Length: 127
Length: 486
Image (cartoon, rainbow over all chains, first blue to last red; front, side, top):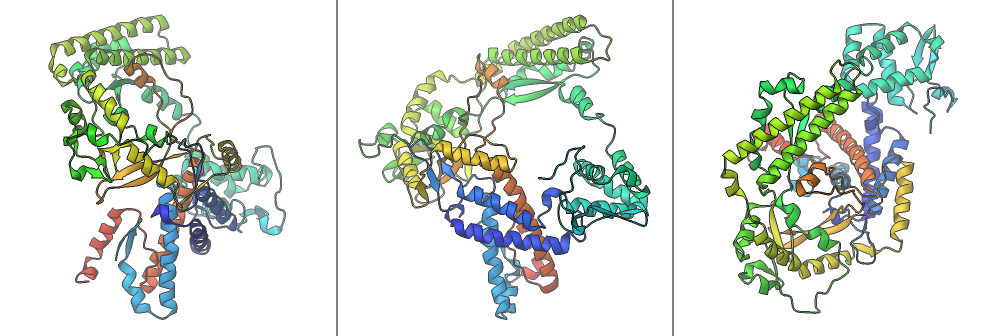
């Protein structure tokens, strides 16, 4: 799965996911708890910092297999990258959350409730 | 960048929203608006408020936070509030924090000096060292006076690398893709391993983990033992490893003694005693080894097998099997190279127009800007066979090959293993990736928390990802009543 995710989708979805988490932290968590600096993502600056890292990691995969020329990966994230599971999880999270949001928007609450026991472990889904 | 030096006092932002504190009726009030160090300011204001009331709650909160966080808070107070404005509550809080941090230099040095360095590092394989019975010898209390301690040193086991270390050649093959000659001559893989069956072939090339096709019995057994098997060392290697470990321990003790200012023991006496102790321990180990000849039965004669292994490595790629890494796979080298070459020239990859130096320079600038460690290295791609698929395929993984020249210790295998530094696989994007991974895990935790609130209030779930399979099973078990007959 890692190797099939288009880069523009990863970048778009990651910004949505990070912004959503940042707003939630700013409005709900920060008001009641003290957080270590490493876990504070509540400001727009934090979102930009994370997205800067995402762009760098996703768009800077070059392989040097000594075949005279370097190969630049333009689709997907290579397996073996430290942040690959988190990038893949959050990319899919946005699509899944939007799917439920659309069901609710179209007043399909009963159908949305059926997905409450859905579990996804990387690319394996149990529903 | 905000100056953080002890003697630097520079107002970064001067608008009322960004003044770090205010004095109201003679009391300090920290600004809790968003901005720089908001989490620090909010915590300090919360603790300042508590410091005027129940001190046990404040003490509990302070002690439950990490020491580094307490130091950060203390530093912010020191740098942001002038000493002449400190009121009783700030003084009480800073005193409480300092008290919780303990006495300067009290524990790290003492732990390092008295506990961590008191070990003997011994390189060995899994069984043969047991016949030397070195642990029993070290615990002989009659030897303690020679050590000038009342406790024996511990043993730190440093095992020799498993056979996968010497058998696997996927890295070397993957790093030598320039010579892809798939069709220029007939492939010899099926002629070398003639015992193969149709199940061992993929597109006419051998790709298998069926070791029955290996004609050499000794090599076949090595493959059957698996990637983590360790070959026993010879008798003289065991003694060499023990002597190296004892000598290193004695040297460490003498070095520490030289630096110590609180000892009455003469350095020359200690050196003599340690030398005697080393000789006694070494000779007793040797006697124990000679008294028990069983270890000799465990030794293998690798010389008889090395020729066949070299032949295998010339024509085949030996690597780990995907999802079952204890098994070794045998894949025709030509086929492996072809598949890897095809993958690297598929739609997912472009030829880079930049040179290696230019890419690394860009990465270096990025890492420097984000204060991340930079390493001048790029990853390579390798394949692990997915033998559980029919027909078997490859999973391609980014690997790290250390190109930096690591100084190699000359001497025997045991000596080189003894002095070898731990492997640190990093490339130019590793530091950024590690930092990103930590940040995204925080994002995931927050989204999970948000989802829990939504589920509690409305009954929906938008967040489906799980960090481990165990949590899924735990949740299913917890909701068993709700899930039955669905």
